[in-house]
Image 1 (cartoon, one colour):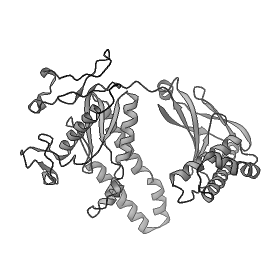
Image 2 (image 1 turned 120 degrees about the horizontal axis):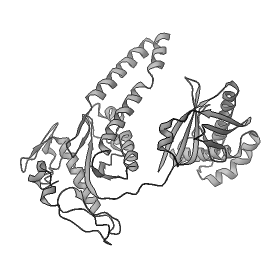
Image 3 (image 1 turned 90 degrees about the vertical axis):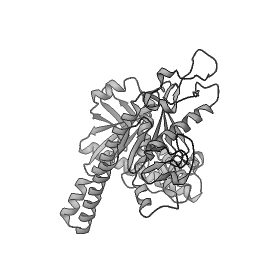
Length: 400
């Protein structure tokens, strides 16, 4: 389990200048490695090392060898990410990666010794009591130094790790459907409407368009002032939703695999823009890491026909769903379409659990969405849920 905590460094003028010159040199090393790799069409670290290390060391004699290797690794990762189609180029004061040999960080004492072009320099930072209580005993893996141009402050993102919590697939299974009108609808009848988020995002878009049209100095000053507010608001909302979902009694959380959803060809007017602005991936990441901390499991299923399938009889037909209404043409079952999709997702998650290898402590139940497993038995066993454990709201469907 890896987490990153962000710490603000306390710097004076000389320390700030040393860090800026180091970031400049690091960017030059990155660009040299990226150019060589792009020219030779390789993102292999060993080949890039033999092809660039000596030239970079001769061009930047003051840059620590660990930082040279870190710049090379970042360049190879960027080339691999672009699939060798474009040459990655970094800005002047881009983030700088430190490993254990180039940085010594003592979180409890609030100081860090970082390698710069002027040698090792000691920096102080404030380590909150909340971090001390939560991350006590975690191991430091690496650190990333970033420079905030507006405030001219330096931030150190420290990556720390510890052993993963034991995950046991037993308990209830929760299906989660993500959408545009309702950000999240879960199979336990929780609805998170997107009306507030859409309203605030529309207001920021309107204000930005008006200020950019004016183009005056005061308008640009206002744009700089409101920059990042929308992003922080969306992140806050996603954190809140993810926390409510993860803190339920469900042990397994099932989501749709929405990778590549923005590349679909047949879409209505304006839909590609809405999908590009839809923060479903951030919400997915928040749910994943919050569930990991609690030892819960997140599964992904194919979204195919989750909105068209009747959760009661299993009939699949496109006309079952008509906008914000769902009515099965076979059995006449009516339900909120997003809630129907969430329950279908939960059923798909149960089916996937049933196909997992036997030597893993995963077993589906024959009725309902509750998973139980006898830890003292060598293999998984199916269990029928007693009638008194079935939720009365779903008793007619035989589901907990």
